[in-house]
Every structure is written in structure tokens, then in C-alpha cells.
Image (cartoon, rainbow, N blue to C red):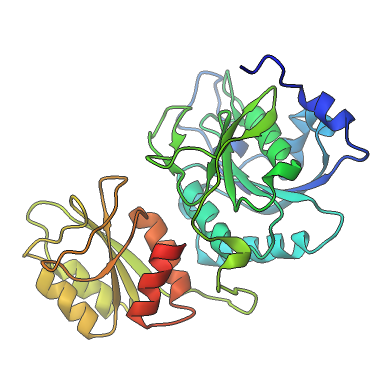
Amino acid sequence: MFASVMTVSQVMAQSSAKPTVAVLATGGTIAGTAAQQSQTTGYKPGVLTAQALIASVPSLGEVANVTAEQVVNVGSDNMDNPILLKLAKRINTLLQRDDVSGVVVTHGTDTLEETAYFLNLVVKSDKPVVVTGSMRPSTAIGADGPSNILQAVAVAASPQAKGRGVMVVLNDRIGSARFTTKTDANALDTFKSPEAGDLGRLVNQVPLFETQVAKRHTVQTPFDISQLDTLPKVDILYGYQNDSGYLYDAAVQNHAQGIVVAGVGAGSESNFVLPAIRNAIQKGVVVVRSTRAGSGYIPEDDAYVGLLGDTLNPQKARILLMLALTVTHDPAKIQQMLHTF
């Protein structure tokens, strides 16, 4: 069915001028190096610069005019709220320019989905923003970074990518930041969209879009970070057999404004922790129920307490709750946001 798909060079040849795509590097495995080519673990992340990453993909020039900028250079396990704010503000500044058609962010895969979803909620442009990374360091045999960068730039340069929200592009897949998640700690084909499916795929490095996302994003959200220097503290607490309420008490004592419960099943909370959760709510902490299962919808259930996380996994529910708390502390309004975004 793809026999007639053109190459990316043929597509760009039909355009009167190549678009400009800004690549913002943040570190991660894609910028990592190891002592041996056989190493896919035990490497040092965040070594290569943005310029080095771009130089590793000479064919980028066939797709777009590319600029490179280093925002930070860390493993994504060390991404924090100040970095998120810095990155998002820089993206919004770049996208205001008429000569910038889209942005690509290179990122470590461990928390890539959290950054992508944060950007999906705070970027104030319908121009394409694409987050990519790699599962193998740059020195490994079969390193996937160069291909993923090329594909991410191809998506960011595509007019068809406009208005689709922030996207995650790795391993020939184009996913929505709202639904894409890391599903395997090691496999190249780790980023998937359980239940929702992908937005599209790439063939010959050409984006082929197939679906749209109904959830609202980017210019459709009320979240304005332009004047923010900090974000509210929100913790995630995991449900398990014989769990204990003292962790909820500790979150309250340490000034958490929100708690996401990674509950068992469809967000169930045990009798061991319910008193502590109710106490947190009484003290003004906003509690959201999610599921540790990885996917699924959180239904109404009078046996449990807290707002419903819709289909957001715990880490993404935390991102949305942080931003919601910058706008309101009204549980009804936050609940509406959880169903809308």
C-alpha cells in the first residue's frame, strides 16, 4: 500500500523553500556515550552537544534548515520543574518567529512522555512540536538516535503536522503526547499508545498521518506559564497489597498541594490508606485517582475518594494536576480539566 510513497527529498523538492526547524537538546541516551560499541546499558547520558547530534545526521539538510540549541544536558531522570519551564518558555519564544516552522526536542526516554505532555498543555502555538530520543547511546552498534532525529525533523517540517498537538516520534511511529507512553525498559519499540493508537507513521522518512486526537491541547488550554518560576508540588503514591497511610501523611507534612494515587485496578484505594487520603483532602490537598495498570479509564466509585484521572497514567496525571493548580483549587474545575485535556 506504500509503493507510491515519495522519499523525503522528493517531497521537499516540490516545496518552494525548505522550512526551518529548531532542535533543542536536553541530553539523555540520544546524547550518551559508552566505552564499548556493544554497550546499551551502563553508558553516560547527556554527553554529546546539540551541534554534535545534528552533525551525526548529514541528510537533515534535505528535510529542513536546522538550527541547534542546548537547553540542558542531563539524563531525563534528572529533569525537574525549572527545566520544564525553561524549555517550554524557549519553545514558545521560538514559535512566535515567522521563520521557524517547528521545534524538535531531543530528550532521554525515561521521562520523555512527561515532558511531552507538559509541552502539550503549555505550548501556545499550533506549529508542530516533536519530542524524540533513543534507546541506544550514540556509540552503540545500531544506534537509533540519528534515524529518530531525522524522522522528528521530518514531522516538525511537515505542514500536515500543524495543529495536532505535541507529538512523540521514535521508531517510525508518530504518537500524541497525550497518549504515548514508554512500555518497555529496554526494547527499541517501547513507545506506544495503549488503546488510543498512533497518529501515524513514517515511510521513506515521510510522515503519513492517519488519526486526530479529540483531547484539547496547546492553544486550547488555559495554562499560561509565561510568568511562572515554580510549579505546585504534586506527589505520586503507589497502591499495593498491605500499603500504608503514613506516606500520605508525609506528603501533607511536606506541603504537597496535590497527590496522585497510582491505585490498583481502576484506581482502587485500600482500607489501609483511605483514612490518610481523606485527611489529606480535608487539609486542602487535591487528590486524583489513576491506575498503576498502565492504561484504562477511572470510573466513579463511591467506595473511594479523589478526583477521576480519566485515562491519564499517574505520571501524566501529575503533570496536569500541577498545571491545574496554577489556575484553580476548585475540585469541580480540576475534574473538568482531567476529562478535557
